[in-house]
Image (cartoon, rainbow, N blue to C red; front, side):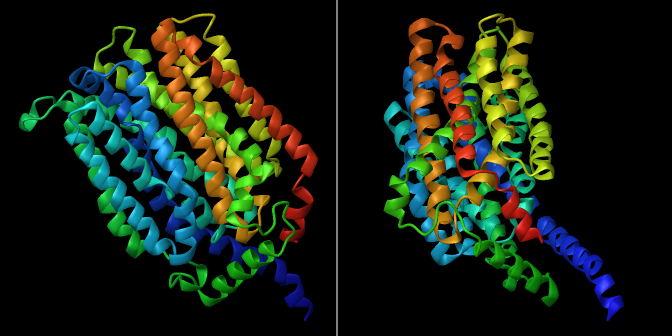
Length: 444
């Protein structure tokens, strides 16, 4: 008996370690690749604009509005999509999302006018809505809270990595202009949209809804994971059971959306407009794509490091706030020097802040909701934040830039939003108090 007690803790640790290793390697690489394709298909309009705007006769304000329609649709369909996934399961719903957005993304090659661009861009947002919050919800079904910041950060490394890969890839595809009688931007949408369809088909065979359905876990591993997740669901949460309408009116949902909107706005705005900003230094399309990849490469590495730091210290509040302040500092620094090297450094600072924020923030947001509120709550936060970042800020950037001719002035609203979000998370986190004691109780 004494021997069993002495060996109990090491045996439990070994069980946890092996279970989490299997879960992470089974689902995370596929989700990372899928989200990477999602971000490429969402943001490749930025590189396509280097040819497309001339062909379709788009002004900067018109292009900004077309880009923003994606996020309007995303806002309208994100919460319903997550509620549908909660009902039918991720194994059916995530493939549906992926195949839909892949087909619509390829249809971007068919647009011939401003009106058709508006329509297809809106449909792309409607098709993809729910993928990101769906995955965050899916991870709460599989990943204990003490692992979530690093897991979400690793999953979301797809965003900067997509731009790191997608920018030079898109530049290369644009250089194929005339191949098969198609313009470079036509080829870009067709080639980059196809992988989503193929991955969507594969998702049906790879994903399982819950741990008890995983034939690649032992019965002991299933029991441990289900028991751990159920114990977490029983913990008190600051946002308990709410109807969807109550959640949409909940002031803390709107505060969290404000907090996330800063990072969302920075990432979205720069993915759409940074190619044109760099192009203004008289670079060719391929060089523009290569240089645009540098800040995203740095952000890809540092967001994982920051997520691990948040998990290791079990601290979310400052890990979120500091990154938002970094974005604001980057904007103000742009007033000092606008040479090409300085611009790359400033873009790097802003994008590191935008992406490093995501792991700690989503771990924090998920920890404040119970399981019945998470599906609608997480989707609502993302939907509102994306509407602010994708619709309001992208449009504001285009209008200010067109009227003033200054990329720096166009980013000032972004700095204000990030400062407000950084202060809000510190105030809100202090009001709620640290989650450390609660998570330690779960661990013990």
